[in-house]
Image (cartoon, rainbow, N blue to C red; front, side):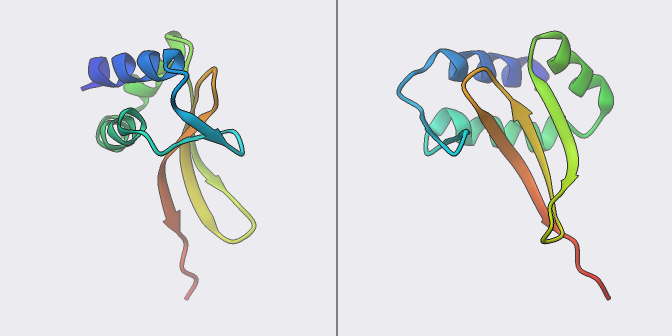
Length: 90
């Protein structure tokens, strides 16, 4: 699956028809496919390191001020947020 993700990310970098809003790549079937594959194959550091070696940076468990955790990939054209989780405090 990591090979598929790399292929998708490289194609996304080349495809100028993909819209960027607030530095985030949005509303395109390639982006949606990359998000799906990323959620399923970036669960281990080995795959994350492989992306980094290929020029894509992966950030995991980034917490914002509203207690949302986000995982995202940085591409040349922008970022893809592939996972968002709300932290519920009891």
